[in-house]
Image 1 (cartoon, rainbow, N blue to C red):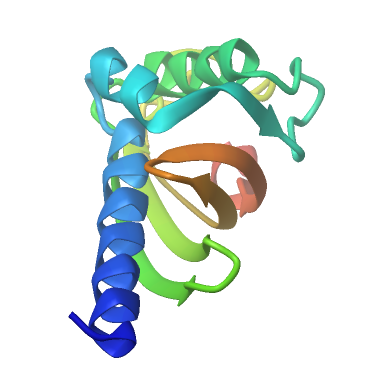
Image 2: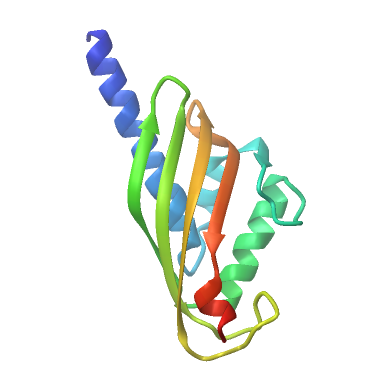
Length: 141
C-alpha cells in the first residue's frame, strides 16, 4: 500500500467516525457507542457552561435528547484534515420539543437546529471538540 492509499484510507476512517459521532444526537442515544467514540481524556472546548469533560458532554446530549425525544440529526457537510486528524462537520437536527430546553418550552412543535463542529481524533477516538450551533428556531418558541 502506498502513501496515497494510506491517506485515502485514513480520510475514509475519519469521515466514518464523524458520521457515527453525529449519530449520537439521535434518540435514543447509543451510550455504548458514546463511550467507544470518546477518549477518557476528551475535552469539550465549547462546553457552554457544562464541565468540559466526557461526562459533561454526555450530560448535554442527554438533556438535548430528553427535550427532543424524537430528534434526528444528520450530516450536511464534512471536511477532513488527515494531517491534523481533525474533521469539520456541518449538521442539522430536527425534533419535537417535549420538555423545557434553554428556558423555552415545551412548545410541542418541530424544531430545527443547525451547527458546526470540529473534532480532533487520536487513533479512533475523539479527544477534543469545538462547536457552535444555532438554536434560534427553538428560542422563538
